[in-house]
Length: 143
Image 1 (cartoon, rainbow, N blue to C red):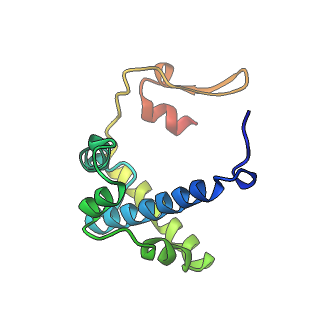
Image 2 (cartoon, helix red, strand yellow):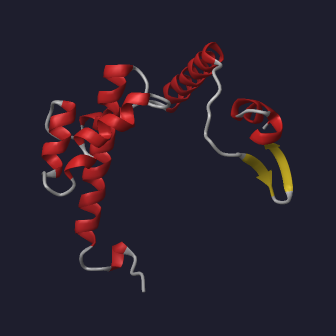
């Protein structure tokens, strides 16, 4: 039986954990963006998260992990900075990031071998599949 957090007596613990996690996410994203300029399709992200966060499991404190990676104690600045951006500025920045990613992808144009057949489907309709198109990127372009 699932009890919604808001009506259970331990709700404050859940929400406190959510807030700390959200703060850590924004602080970590800010660190990656300042160091590498991008997160999506960045081959370094996974190994850095493994090395600095996941490797330790419960043997290290959460606050210590965030501090070790980002170089500062966990605080809400990255999150509140993110929240203070106007909608117009957020949309402009997202469009700019999207266009940069499209441009970067067009420059690279090396196919990705997923060692599998990927199908884009809608119900019974197969829109595209990497096997019949010969590659993952060709299937993505058709999709």
